[in-house]
Structure formats: C-alpha cells, structure tokens
Image (cartoon, helix red, strand yellow):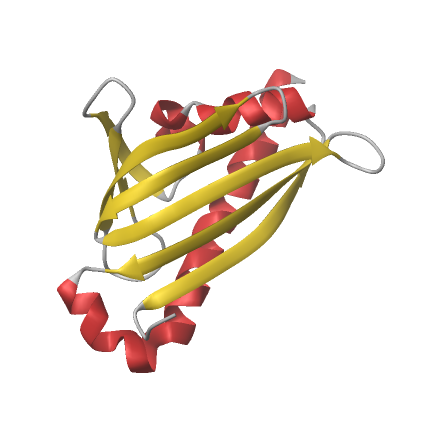
Length: 150
C-alpha cells in the first residue's frame, strides 16, 4: 500500500431483507434518490456508469464504476472504480443474527485526483472522516427507504 492508497471497511444493519438490500445496492442509478453523497449517476455504457460523490469536504470525486461481480444468489456486488479514485468496492449482504440484514463493504482505492494527492500525507484522517460521513448518509438513506416501504 502506498501513501495514496486508502482502505475503508464497515457494515450497515437494516430491517430490510437481505434480498431487498442487495437489490437496492445493485441499482446504482437510483443512488442519488436515497444516498445524499451521490450527487449524480450517469450511465456511460451497457454496464458502466459515472458517479459524482461529495460529502462534507469541499471536493467532488468522479469515478466510472464497472461491475466485476453481481451475484444475487450469494448477494455479493463488486465494482472496479476508475477516475479521481481507482480501485474496487465490494458489498456482501447477509441475514442479520436477529431480523433483517447486514451489508458489509470493503473499498480499496488509490487517490488519483491531483489536488487530493498533494494533501494525502496530512489530510488522511480528514478523508476517512469524509468517507464515514458519506457512508453514514447512505445508511440513513437506506433506513428511510425502510420507513417508506414499511
């Protein structure tokens, strides 16, 4: 791992079924309707899309997402990312111990955006905080979907 690499992990718990969470996460084009960090999603190919993401810090990241693995049988999603960040993101959705589900994500990216690369040595904790806020907005958006769908 070099100084421009960042790895993120986490888990979302939801009262939605594992299949419902998987389907929600698989529909990347709908992200802006429930995940506030996703400012836009534009389809660029049959299976590719370009996303613009912004959280707390005053910068946007633009990346092309290309599906690598979409397996609804085991509820795993993985996509390659290219653009301001390059790497991969992976979701695994499983039944929760009680009711609902847990969606676990891992993301390993290399920052390519020049302005951010300059700040990496000192700003890494802020980038992690920014990512945490972006993921929290997604978790809250998913919870709001539960409230709307019952």
